[in-house]
Image 1 (tube, rainbow, N blue to C red):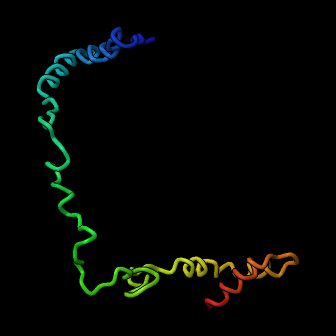
Image 2: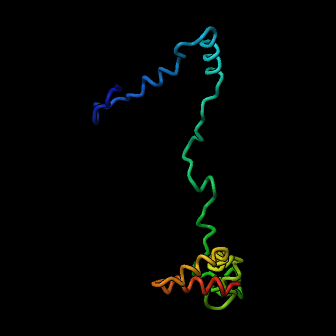
Image 3: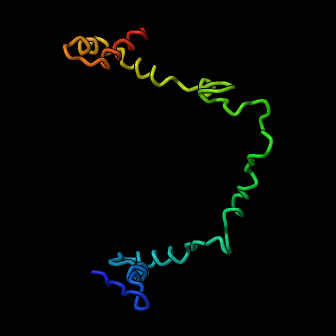
Length: 139
């Protein structure tokens, strides 16, 4: 079982055994140890970028691309509600999305005989009957 590190100033690293285990191959065959050491010495070590690298130096200042609420619109003549389901401008159809309800109901069309049978049973819910009505309306 691995050692357990103590608290606070008594703590010490317990992963030293793993680091030293990587220095040599256990049970290496003839010539494998030399090949391993050769490969290990030729591998480049990972380099950190160095210095204080921050988000702005990598990707630019994101604050410079923010448009303030008191600034003029970048799309003059286009209402704020353009693409919304209400208000001025194009509606949801501008997004070019399928009507998901219609797609789902069309998927039920092959099962219409079974759905009708279920809707005609005594005690069938009004919701079941409405599903059948909606699927039939698509035909």
